[in-house]
Length: 90
Image (cartoon, rainbow, N blue to C red):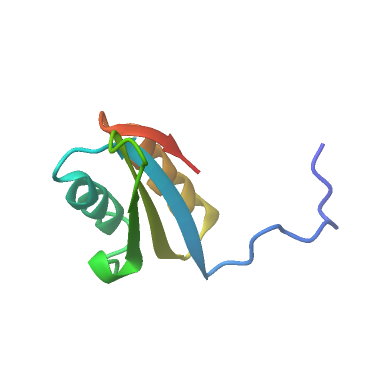
């Protein structure tokens, strides 16, 4: 049962980093960018740090989003997790 006296883990609104790992396809960052801007219109490519895997098979993106609520954050995770090119969302 939830304890209403507990402090929340995340205080909204806030900046939150989401790591998205997926296939190293040419437009991976564009796909992620379009998905996140559905929920954060101010999000742009300057909010993404990209790193390739040592084998070149995967790309890791760290996306710094501004979220207003837990529901908004959950919707972003659901959207990103549903992409065909995404392997993990952390």
